[in-house]
Image (cartoon, rainbow, N blue to C red; front, side):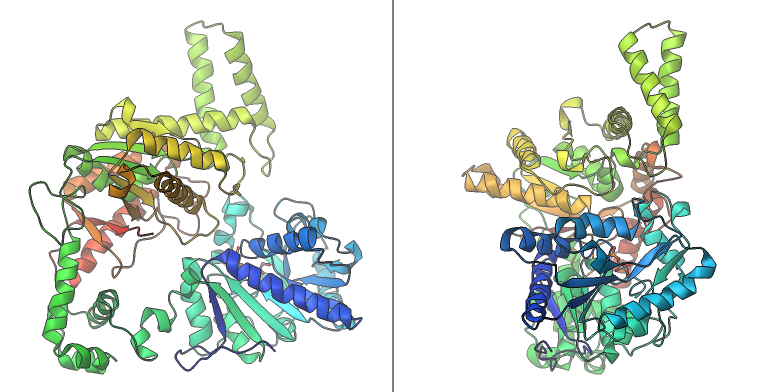
Length: 639
Ligand code: F6R
């Protein structure tokens, strides 16, 4: 059994190991696996491991492959059983877990192909029950699992044991939750193509493993991690049933740990250092819970909700209330580029220089307008020199129907005006022929990708023109890491960094805006942020002077908003500005009505943006500050 962590300062019922990043967490788990393999080998025994698929274990498998290739870790002695497989699903389909495991682990190591097992997604329904029993039997025959690796769904599923799965459940055919189908729809491009069923090991199968490690990365897993480890165990959150195992550890990154009480409300789990940030978080949380403006909180409220310690340290609730009220008030500003001719020390941005050179990095061609459209327009209207760097082409998010319309237009244009250009004719013919015979799992041809990218480029340019920018202020970077033609992108590369350094050096901005979506560790937004941070770091190391005066502000992409307690700059919007932003988003017609990779939220982007901006304004109002129609929120990036 692995050493237990000290749980005296937490409410956690399962030991949790927290790492700064998925990479570091994965290296830890890879070492546990490597040690186990060697230990078993030394005893002349087989090592039996249960494996998971999905985005979470990819970094783990990459590390195991590295250990195999560079350190000679051998898998000859290893037997593996995968948790699950979609049903129905051909073993060789791109979305099949057979394919996944072969690609990320099996074919890159020396594991014996007779020693890995996955549920079969191709059997006729009447054979599945027998197959499931056989799967359980095989695990037992192998001596039972020594270690089971798990991921976790946002609904708490482990394997595909959806909420409601019994603690006694065994390997079986189950119906996937709609939320799971939506969450996994990005693998398929479209929710309707996601299978409705899956074969999964049961909870009891998992609990029989001698040791269990559940891994989770990213902020979107944080709420379910809290439920699974802190709340009572319940079949509604299958991962919480792991509380019944005596050698289970959760290995998670800081983002996935962020909702745990010891971080979110550290004063409830032990002594804490009352920094301004923690005070703000505690008091705002208290005010929201009691639905009271901050300035109306009383000593009793503090005492009743576990904040007596803060009162003892600070004396009186009124003083604390005021301190927090001022922090909130000072985060609101109608001057995102700084207010000229003022020396307000607590204003979020510097008043000089004015105007500023501003560079907005937009991971996809519409993130600028969706996430900070109001601020974008204000910056321009207030006289700043605003540039936009569109980091990726965004080409995979254009549907085939949409591109067909444009190809039809181009063909019609040539016909009407009698243009007889053989090169362009060939391109259009090839593109049409490709689309006519394209299979749903097939990658787009180079031409189609280029045309799709062009469509998005025209939309972005039109939005910039709508805001008032001229051609020199619009920069299409086409970062190569994105150009795989599939959902899965390459890691950031040297060329991505160099292109970003070049743009930064050309503009020498005093203010940079980036998408700060740390929620999805594998997503395009995260890579786009990493590229900017690395580029800035290199420029700093090279000693460019201007970089010392450049501030980075982070906005959240289409999916989420900052927690109210974190916001450092909130830019108010009038109803008119909200409408103007909506029209700016509408320009992105390829992303309207039916977005191919929409995730588990079926609102359109403009609706998400509006609800979120109105929500932020409402929260400020609830806390006792002026209530605007909407607000965009930013956090400053500090290295
Ligand atoms: C995969 C599996 C699932 C995933 C879970 C998280 O074999 O059994 O339980 O672990 O859906 O998926 P990701 O890692 O993609 O967030």
